[in-house]
Structures are given as C-alpha cells and as structure tokens.
Length: 154
Ligand code: AMP
Ligand code: ZN
Image (cartoon, rainbow, N blue to C red; front, side, top):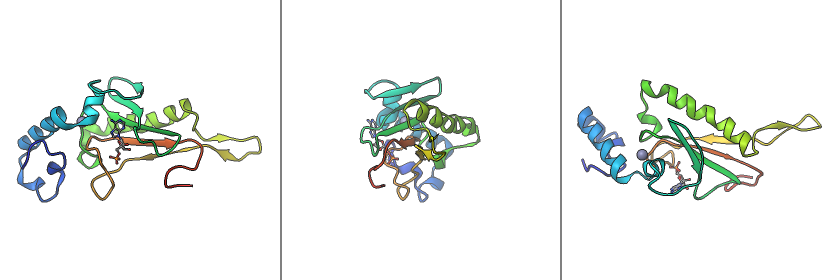
C-alpha cells in the first residue's frame, strides 16, 4: 500500500488486505497531504465559495460545464460515495437538501411559466470511482444548471 496515493485505498483488490486502522491512517494522510478539496475547505487554496456552514462547503467548479456549476462538499474528508457509512447519512441529506437552495439563489430552480409550462432546472450528480468518472477523491456533488446548451448536453 502506498500511503498518500489517492486511489489506493479504494481498490477492491487492496481494500481487504488492510486493516481498519491502516485504512484510517491512509485517509488521514490523503486528507493532510493530497486532497485539494480539503485544502479548499481549510481555505488553504482559493475557490469561489458560495455557501458555507459547519458541515458543508459549496463553491464554483473551476471548469464549469454549464452557466451554473457548483460543487457541494462535506468539510470532513470522505473519499467517495462508496466509502460512506451509517454515520454519514445525515450529512448526505444535508448535501442533497442544499442543492435546491443554491439553485434558487443562482436562478436555476424549476419554475412555472405564464403558459403553465415548467422552465429551468438543474442536475445533481455524484461521480463515484474510476468508471463513474470521479477525478477528485473527496466526496462531492455537482449542481449543474442554467440556460442550455451545457457541455455535452443540449
Ligand atoms: P469529478 O469528476 O466528479 O471528480 O469532478 C471533479 C470536479 O472538480 C471537476 O468538475 C473539476 O473541474 C473540479 N475541480 C477540480 N479542482 C478544482 C478547484 N481547485 N476548484 C474548483 N473546482 C475544481
Ligand atoms: Zn479531502
């Protein structure tokens, strides 16, 4: 096991070989040394923060795929959605519940038009693991919205 390498403690072929204590040490190393979102949460590197509370931070994606592209993260380091445990259930709920509030504030909440049709809206997305397209191994939820076209979508 190579402590400090972001992916190593997630891989199925490595995971069963390490103890819970080693795993915890590994996560702490990742948090301190390598995790860009931990550094953003600690204000060690700048970001476009749009929301902060005791548990969560939301900031603008540096490479937006749409007019509104925010990332919602827990301040505590969790590698990925597949690493969440029972104790994180409330935190996940807070992350999800923050999306509509941010959508409202950033003008992309769905709204009823004069003719009765719906307009607006946004996408919430958690990429998980290599095949899920996860690039940053600190749990985060994308909140993507605003007038289309978006990158890769009409
Ligand atoms: P994912 O592929 O789900 O892991 O998405 C990671 C996202 O983090 C990408 O959309 C990146 O553009 C974004 N990102 C990476 N570094 C930063 C940063 N320093 N500030 C804001 N967004 C970032
Ligand atoms: Zn982190």
